[in-house]
Length: 163
Image: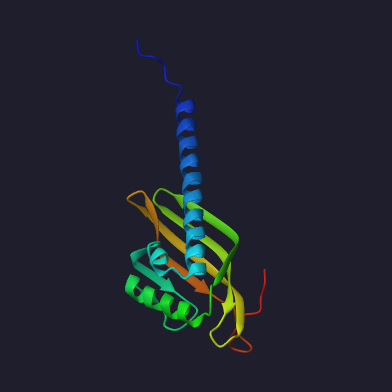
């Protein structure tokens, strides 16, 4: 006679595997975001671009409406890097990561700061959402959306807000 299977134990075991996988995925995505911050800080364009999908769609706070594909995004990042005298600091705060299967989403506040080539010190907080996909056992950023709140009375971005 076949051995009885405790269905509840099997399901709970699978649920634990799913939870462990989600926690592992969140940890890997956090490492991806930390690597992104390090690459920005060092202005290491090759390392930074290695974290993005070749088909990335990037919404930035600067014109145009979007940067599509790695060549367009690389040109945008190089323009940003060239505007800074020295490193660009990037701080992540209030990070939330959702992950399941091969898809992960992170939303956070980022503060970038540094000194422009004209000597002016700059720094502001932005809202960021990063959508990732795991492919070949590796997470890549498929979409990133950076935004600033808008003061509708003045018609300008609210760049002085702090968390």
